[in-house]
Length: 454
Image 1 (tube, rainbow, N blue to C red):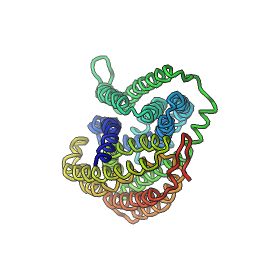
Image 2: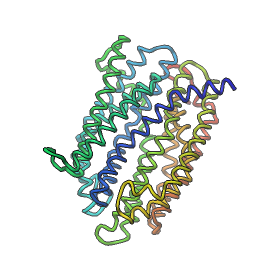
Image 3: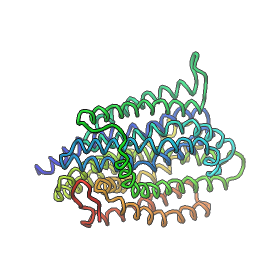
Image 4: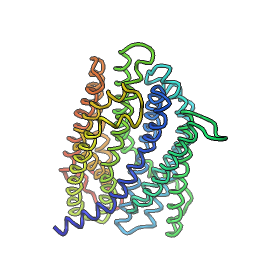
């Protein structure tokens, strides 16, 4: 019993601040949705399309956080703090090297990127406007990922929390000011929402980089880019990039299926309601996913540290406890989502059609929350263990099964709730099966500072 309490305290010490910080992250999009939604349904649908592009670009680079967390945590477990910070700085430099070309590519290709979704002109125009401005925030967003990963690996989840809260407050205030204008500030509408987010993200990135640089200076770690270290960080991130690519591809396929299904209703602008509904549902799903992912963040940091210290038994024990936490958390979020589903739509849009369409979709999402709780925890455990290669292959297998099914469902004329049934049952169910299977083996339990799962 005392061992369980000790594990619970360790998980809570990392997970609770991570929970609050992760809850704050999707509030960027929730805040944007709440402000933009009152401009009109086409603007909200445009935000949905543009937001999918931005989150996909940033999401593909999530290895900057995950890989850095695992690598830094292993060095900390082995007692090598200076080496841990040097590895973290390599991640920051890699973020800049990736972010600059990503910014240029996204801004210049805004029109064709939005056109991929096949939305009507009244949706495509605000989507393109938002995307061009939001692209300027890609370098700050990638620095936020890398900086957060360094601090998590150092077993510090409180600093990212403070930065996330401050950034979200700034984002909301800037959104309201720049979207609607006040005094000498002009009314920028949806472009103002994107600009407000970019300014808030830049401030957050600066704060995290300053914290990491100061810690590195105290430990005597060099601040200049170490090209071999940056290349090593990039190589370590490739399997996680592939894993993330399969996950993002699944989300993109889902959005594409929704647009195809909505387009079958015919008529100019008739696709706005289901696309806007899906945007709100996916934003709320992401909000709850971040809540559940708090335990996964703790899993990455704890698993890396335990394996770095050579403690296989401790890794097994803490994994079992975290899975239990994931199940209970999923039940709680599912009940909360189901209970509030009739009223959530009113927070984001005055469109009665979107409000009514949102309720059945949220009920489907609520049923899948316990599964999501287990999936996110085990994903975090295997990331912390450096098991990226298996996660990449598993993600590809799930995508191969899910994509044709959701597209066939859409092509058959199924409505939005049925598309979400396929998303939860096939996509999330497939992830559950592959992750549980792997966790029952010993192949991922590799110790040392540079351990790589078999």
